[in-house]
Image (cartoon, rainbow, N blue to C red; front, side, top):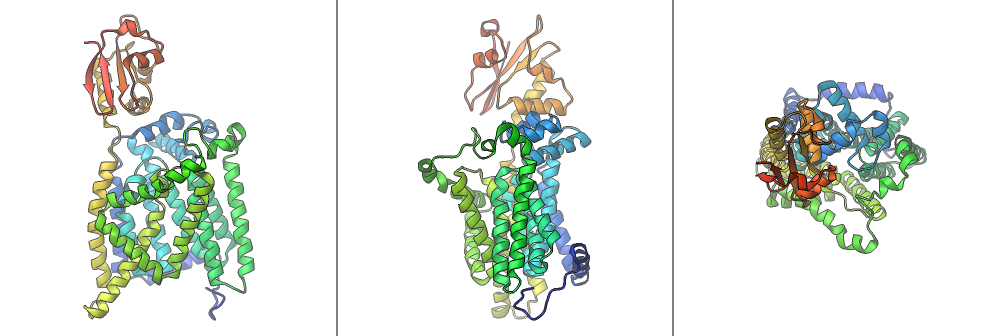
Length: 499
C-alpha cells in the first residue's frame, strides 16, 4: 500500500504472505472463475503442446549438437556461437539425460516454463487490477500466436518469459511489502534470465525501471529506504550475472557476449539506417500471428488503456526506456523473438481495453449484463479469435527442417557400415540430431570411406554449396566420386549419390 494512504499494509513475510494470498485467492474466487482460469491455462498448454512434435529446426539442432552433448563445464564456458543459451542448454541436457534424445525432450524445458508463466501472469494482473482483467489477459496470452510459436521452440525464450512474469509478480509484492527476500529473488530470477539469453537484458532492465517508477509513484515517507533496497538488488543482479558468466568472461572476454563476430555491434550509420527494422519486424510478427484488423484494434486499445491506467503507463514506459537505452548501447539487430516478452504487456493493454468496452456496453446497451457473464462471453470470443489464428500462425512458423527426416531415412535405407554421408553446415546439425534420436551411428557423417564403400552428399542451396566443396571439406578427392548424380531435391537442399 502507498504510504499516502491511511491503511497500512502489514507484511507476514514472504512465505506468510504467500500462504495468505493463496487462501484469499481460494476463498474470494467463485468456482466458475476458478474453472475458467484452469480451462484457459490448459488451453494454452494444449496449443503449445500441439507443436512439441513439429520437425526440429536448424537452430534447435545446432544448440543441442554443438553444446548440449558436451560436458557441463564446456557448456558454461563456451560461447563460440550465440546459440549456446547456457541455462537453456543445461536444461536441455538434463531433459535429454532423463528422457532420451528427441525433439519433444529438447523442447520440454521451454514448454514447461512457458506454461508456468500463464498462472504467474494471471496472478500478477489480478493483483495489479482485478480478476476480470486478469482472466481476459490470460486468455489472450494463452492463445497468442507469437508466444505460442516462439515459446514452443527449444531456444530459451519460454524460460526467459517465466523469469519475466515471475519478476513482475515478485515486483508487485515488493512494491507493497518492501520485503527484502522478494527483491533478492527478483535479482536472482533476472540473473538466470540473462544467463539463459544475453538479450534478456532488455527485459531485466525494464523490470528494474518499472520498480523504480512504481515506488516513486506510490511512496513519499519510506521512499528512500525502498530505493536503497532496489539499488542493492540491482547490484546483486549484476554480480550474480557476472558470476554465472565468469567462465566465459575468463576464457573469451566480455566482448564475446556483447559483440560476437556472428552478431556484431553495428556502427552508428548502419544502425541508424536499420534500427527501425526491429520495430517493423515486431509489428509484422503481431499482424501475421492474428490479422491486420485485430492488430489495429489492439493498437487502439493500447492507447486507450494507457490513457486510463497509470499502472499500465508505468509498465509501457519501462519497456520503452529499457529498449531504447540498451538498443542505443548495444546497436545490434535483435531477432523478433527477443522482444516477445513485450507481448505480455501489450496483451494486458488489450485486456484492459476489452474490460472497459464491456463496462460501457453494460452501462449503455445491456443494463442487466453482469460482470461474470460478460467476462465469460468475451473470454470465449477472444479464445476463438486468438486461438484459431494463433495456432495457424504457429503451425506455419514451426515447420522446422522436415527434409532432414527424409535424409536420415535415406541414410538408413541406402548406406551400410563403411559408407559415408557427407554434409556441411547448416544441414549437418539437424541430420546428426535425428541420427542421435534414433540411436544410429553418427560416424556415418565423417571420416574416410571404407574400401568398396559408397558416399552420399548433401548440398545446401542457401547458402549455395557444391558437391566438390562438400567432399573437399571432408578430405575427399572429388575426382574419385565423379559419378554422383542428384537423387533428391528440396527448396533448400539437394542430395547426390551414385546411380
